[in-house]
Length: 500
Image 1 (cartoon, rainbow, N blue to C red):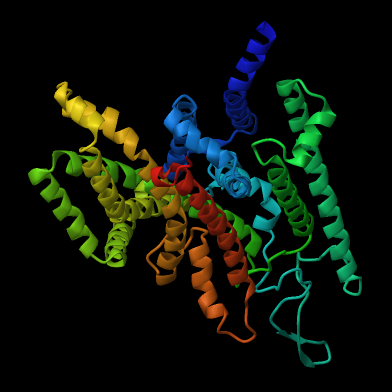
Image 2 (image 1 turned 45 degrees about the vertical axis):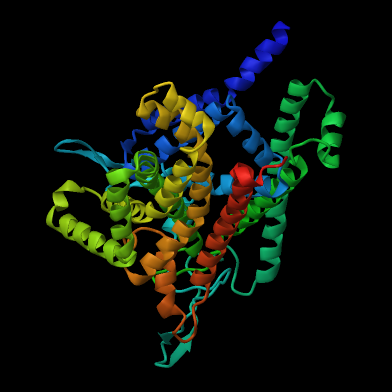
């Protein structure tokens, strides 16, 4: 009995211990390498969002009306496959949300000098792709520049040739087998992905054997036959495919530009991966701004009614009548004017770009809370006629207590459904706003900025197609996984669709 209690406590404290160990490892790295930590506003909000999600799941496990829908989500194969994909994107976003400045050597008048550029953990992992820049365009996995240049020979002749890239494929001679080298690296990447997946599978196998007191054969047989409620087989297959893709890209990116380079010779793969954080921040942090307005005002309008309902309806009706793009453009232009007139408040370019990104999240949140507020208002008006709420009024409970204890828990399914459904729309909204020039800062890596730059690249001759394709692939995978996961969440939390 005591052994089972000990194992249960270990499982409960596993994630907090891992989080604490990660924080301690980062503090040790900062101390050992003398890094200067940089706290961006969006980084802090990302940490708050992670803690809030952990707190929500901790509370949901103890509440039956939340635990049952979450159990249906966990048992759904499509949802768990999409969750594995989204977890990969979120891991990249978190790695890109830990920022610091590297020491530049020497000491200045005010102490040790640090590099003006802000770096993240993802930048260190992709340092080679970040630093190795060509002169101009290079197609994916190419050895040669995409544009011809004029070369003058000693005898006075001039010739238009494709020059060799400085970094892409520099490890092989011009006449070497280019295709064979790519195939060899693809094979090594597949092997590395399988090895990494096998290592994770062994760790998970040991944990499952300890938790269920079963043999390795029984655990593997249960996973392969999909006998349990959780679709482990589909999740493991998805994880192995992601690790194989990561291994192949990592093996090729060591010597080639996998998705080519842009006009200034910057690696397109690096820009696409760096854009993941921007998409996730736009899709998630906007909800932190939207939810307080929508939930608070919607419950007030539906419960108090009267002149309070009239004022709130007038407010969101007026706000909905203003074109969102014009409001966002005006706010972004005012922020740009403020930044230009107060350059001393923003010592680094990353802080200026981060403020614009945060401001864009705030504006999107202010302009997108009206629809959810209408839904919550209507649901609150319906709940006010329910028997349990009439009984609470008859017993003389305070209106604030009624709204917090009885109404708020019963409208949370609408909140959760709206949040997951709006995520993909906000990611696409960033691309559209950046395309028209009122989105994130041009110095910020985002899929919208890549699509905006591809507008001219697609019209040139020869056509440069790979930046647009790279942004499309990453955005398509993220939005598709988010939409499929949102459909399952909607079916699980909507009371009208619950299984009988």
